[in-house]
Image (cartoon, rainbow, N blue to C red; front, side, top):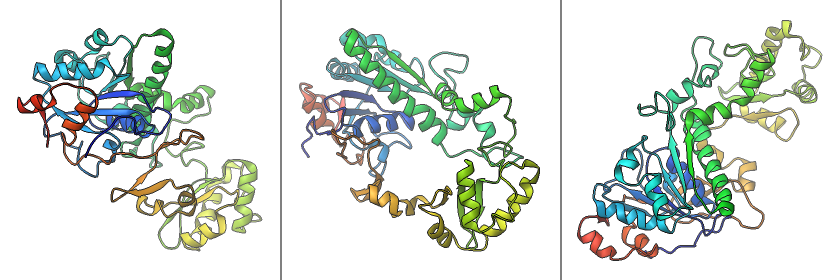
Amino acid sequence: MTYELGKGTGPLSGVKVVEIAGIGPGPHACMILADLGADVIRIERPGGQMLAGGATMLLNRGRPSVALNLKDPEAVATVLELVKDADVVVEGMRPGVTERLGLGPDDCFAVNERVVYGRMTGWGQTGPLATAAGHDMNYIAITGALFGLGQDKSRPHFPTNLVGDFGGGSTYLVIGILAALLESKLSGKGQVVDAAIVDGTAHLNAMTSAFVASGGYTEERGANLLDGGVPFYDIYETSDAKHLSVGALEPQFFDALVTILGVKDTCPGQHEPDRYDEMRAVLTETFASKTQAEWVEIFEGTDACVAGIIPITEAAEHPHLKARGTFVEKDGMVQPVPAPRFSRTEATLTLPPSREAGEHTRDALTAWGVADVDGLIERGVAVQV
C-alpha cells in the first residue's frame, strides 16, 4: 500500500495526532479522532501488546501502525520529530512512564509548544492510587457508579467495560482534547489533558448525584426510578424467553403502554407505589403471553416506549438502524459507522485495523516527513512487518 495524509473527510480533517499506543480507552479515543477525519499515526511496540491488535480490532481502524523500539533513543527522537508537526499527542501509560522514555509533556512542548497532550488513565495523574494497576470495574467501583448497577438486590452487575473505559474514559479524553484544541487556536499554546476514568465516570453519573441531593434516592439496587424500582421502567420476558425494554416514564407514555396492552382497566395507576407489586405482576403476565417479535410488531413506532432487546449480531438488521446505516460491512466485518453525524463534513471510514504492529511503518513515517526511514528499519529502531 501507499499511505497518504489527508484522506479523512470528517470535521477534523487536517488535524494531526500522534498516538503512543495503549489498550482500551486510549485506542477508542483515537478511533473516534480518526473516524472524524484526523490523521492519526499509531506508535506501537514491535510485536504489539496483548488485547491491542489484529485485523479485527476495530479500535485500531482508521490509522496506520508504526512499530518503534522506544527503548532506543533514536526511536524517541523519531517520535519527537512527528510531534513537531502534530496538533495532538495521546498516551495511555501509567503516570511517569512517558517521562522516563523522554516523551512526557515537557519533552513534547519543547519541540512544539502548541501541541495538546492527552493522557488516558484509570486513576488519574495524581492521587494515592495514581501508579497502581486497575481496570474498568475497579475505577467505576470507587465512584459509586458500580454499586447501583443492576437489579439484583444482593450484588451489583458490571456492564462489561462500557461505563468506565469508554463512557467515563475515552469519551472524556476526546472532549478534553477537542476543548484544548479550540483553546490552543486562540492562545497558541498547548496543555495537558488529564483524562481519568474515575473523574469521567463521576461526571457521567451526575444525575445520580442530583437524585441523592434531592433526598429522593434510595441507595439500593432496583429501588429507584431508573434502575427497575418501578414496574413501568423495567425489563420483561416474552413467551419465547426473549426480553423487552419498557420505559414508559411519562404519564402519556404509561397510558399508551397500558392501553396497547389492553390492561388499562385492570392495571393499578402509575402513581400508586403501594400497588407496584400488583402492577408488575400484571405486566409480567401480559408480556409473557406473546413472543418478542409479536410485541415488537405491536409496539414499535408507538409512544409506549417499548423495544425488543436483541444481541449485537442482529443489531445491524434492525429496520431503524438499517435505514440510518448505523452499521456497515467493510473490510470483511460489520462495524459501526462514525458518530455523530455532520451535515457538511461527513465522516467516512478509511484504513482497516492493522494485521500486525508495524504493518505501515515505512509508508506512514515517510508520509509524515521522517527522514531516512529505511535506515531506521535497517538499524532496528523501527520495524516493518
